[in-house]
Image (tube, rainbow over all chains, first blue to last red; front, top):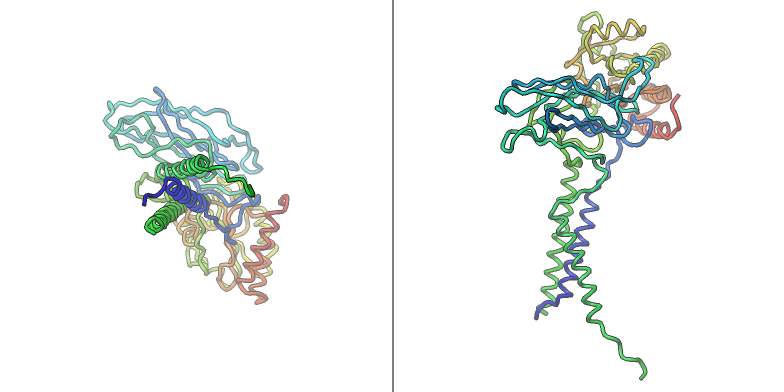
Length: 221
Length: 236
């Protein structure tokens, strides 16, 4: 009356495969391009929202706040539009130290220095509040898409990672990785457990079947 | 018999689990495809931090579709002389309503094209109207430097409100709205226009105005035409 191990493993394997099919299928919903949103001459896709085109995070590195921008392919930020200011009380910050950018010549705006792909600004700071307030900076930046679209200047309050002790009111700041959002499928822990469990059951079922297999009697004597 | 029932029940459980997991993943990705929500502040100049602002959370991989209204909404913005200018001043004419800013390079590149269009199409019942989302002084200086001779309205938050009413919630420039002489919005074009695109769009607006085709037909032709242009190697 007991369920055999192989039968149970088969069930788990089927479950895992079903999960995988639904998860992978569900992770990439296709989005049709509406007629009135066409605007990208490259046809590489629609324009990105500003927070996807330009991602920003900040972390503390000794006496310096490092503000890191990750810029999507085909987009750029103007160097002169990157501004970092103190936001929390009793904080002073220096002008951001930025590396040399790429020179871009525009017939109307002249030569402009821009950043593509990413850039990190180093901002020296002094705080005089003895840690009474969460360290906060205001970062302003402005950029465009090569395909011919510009975004209004964006201004954000950042709470640099490592600056505010646990329990403080820091906002969830992530220094983004190099991968463009949406370019990979990420799985949550419970999804990983389901998939790995299913795969393990699949392998164990195979081993079990192999062990229990016996040579067939010779046909015809 | 019992073993068979247990097998069936077990299979049902794992299949249901799979379906649940898939649905949950689909909904999670649809709601927030970007897995790194940063500070929740909308795009915009010096926008204050706000945890309740869900602009980033709702951001998908591409700009959210604009909710383009069927008809041009009524609005009034300051002209270069500072006087309020209602858009219905151009009532009865087809309108190319171009939103731009002086600091925006692709916007500035469009200006000579729009100037030419305003001359070439004036006798055919088409008016070009610029909406500069910028400080009035900067706009006036720029318009003088580039000899822009079509009407330009200016505004800051009020102009952004008009953009929003046209369905462009995320402030981006340039974008251009093509309106037929009856006030119906034929198309909204996001990004820098080139000669071939504007000729295509205005051709369709004109055909609608002459009752040679319906709005739906014009939009289908625009869709096909823009797709064809997008696949072309380069713009003139």
